[in-house]
Length: 171
Image (cartoon, rainbow, N blue to C red):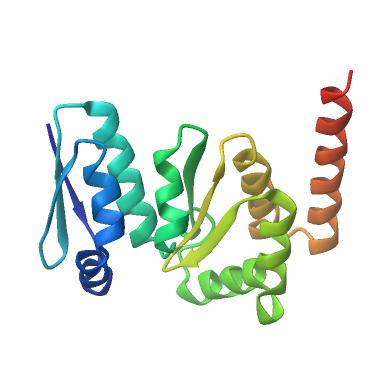
């Protein structure tokens, strides 16, 4: 089986220099071939191919090597929220990105700390990489922000959900 992934030229160059990442992916039985803007993946194992594709996709979305490689674990996943689903205006997309990032990156940092997920705002997308159990909470919080909710309300929702999970886990 084979997969083709289109990535930016700068990320392709960075990927070709990152031997650690390529070795980890190759260790799963996937062959990686990097072109200018194309990454070809091939493997006999469909599951390994899907995992390798998610790692390359995360890397292309702006995640660092150490973060992207977490996707090789069973309990990590990647979710991508397109800003185009919220507006077609480039100016409004920039405003929405600013709402997710916050002043000096403080909102994004707090979201990552509170949800236990890595968050990247890159291009026209907001990407979330984290434990499978935590991603729905991070998605809900980001969607609330993109829909115009006050940041205080978003963090209040996160805290309520965390308390709910804690209480349900201790019964």
